[in-house]
Image 1: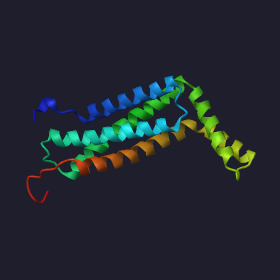
Image 2: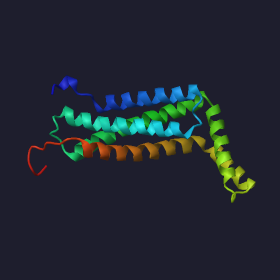
Image 3: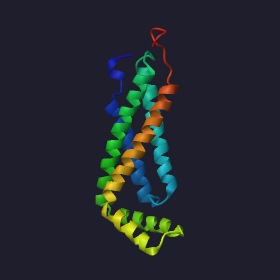
Image 4: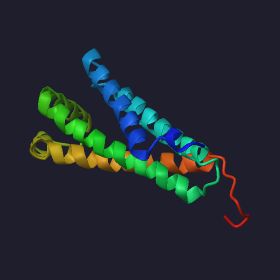
Length: 169
């Protein structure tokens, strides 16, 4: 395959990140940001994108590539997407602080469903969440995207056709 037709890891990561950002903004504008299913749509697109990146990497290399190389490529794409989505999330919350308040209200509602939590415990948990909201948001995104990225990279590497040049590869 010609060198100029290969899509780099960075380009794939930025393309998938851009799609996720557009969808996230679309959900926000449409008022769906409080719906749990929107998170799962984002993860589904993310994982599908990483698997596409793995499969296309195999094709770009005429399928003469190992499982490990394909997995590595997919995880690099996942890492780029993770960085972009964390940056987007921080900027988005800074631009629209009402997102933080909505998240706090949702957290309160979920905690109130737990009959074992007292009002004092709920207030203490919400106070801590309010104080460290950005840290929790970044940590959650980091762990969530990297775990999902590793899973998607494994699946992508497993389903990508491989034609090793020797039987020992």
